[in-house]
Amino acid sequence: MSLARFSSVIIFMLLLAAATFAQNDLPDASSRTPGRPRGDDASINLKEMLARQRAERDKKDYEEMLKRGEEALRLAKQLENSYEQNRGFSSDDRARLESLEKVVTKIRKELGGDDDSESDERTLLQPVEETPKPSTMEEGFKYLQSTTMKLVDELKKTTRFSISVVAIQTSNSVLKLVRFLRLKK
Image 1 (cartoon, helix red, strand yellow):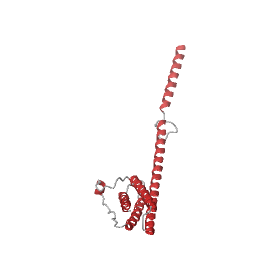
Image 2 (cartoon, one colour):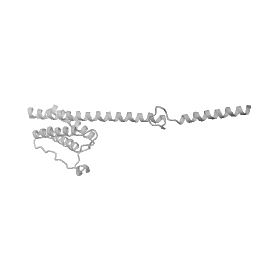
Image 3 (tube, helix red, strand yellow):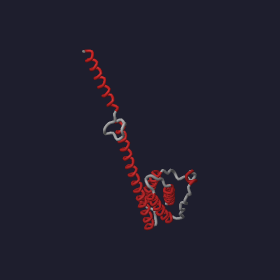
Image 4 (tube, helix red, strand yellow):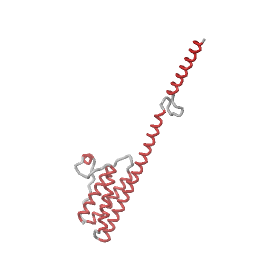
């Protein structure tokens, strides 16, 4: 009888061990997908959190780019008004012109554009709008203001998910006008 009892204890222990082992392979009750191990939930939550953070960062970057566009427009208007009033180019105007160049360069970089070289393949594939060629400082400031306004309008048309070739080309035009005005001073 002790052998029968010993056998039943062994069988009971084996069944208990098998049941314990089988429970480790069962899906967690809090798991969203049956049969998925617990560690996957943490990685899914992490991926979702990172995607939300990336979307928030992209939205913030886009809004900052729009603010830079408004800043560029404000500077261009100030430059035009100052030239109309003074019929000259003051040191404040030089500082504004440099600020405008920095802001527009930053916008162009955020749009994915690079230097405004004419031999770029992308410009060969896209219809290129002519940059206005002013003959006087007064025309230069008027073109600067109108071209900057066009750039801001293009920025408002884009989304944070798109790249606007027209906006890049317009930013290049603004930069050419800034360089023209800086050299003409």
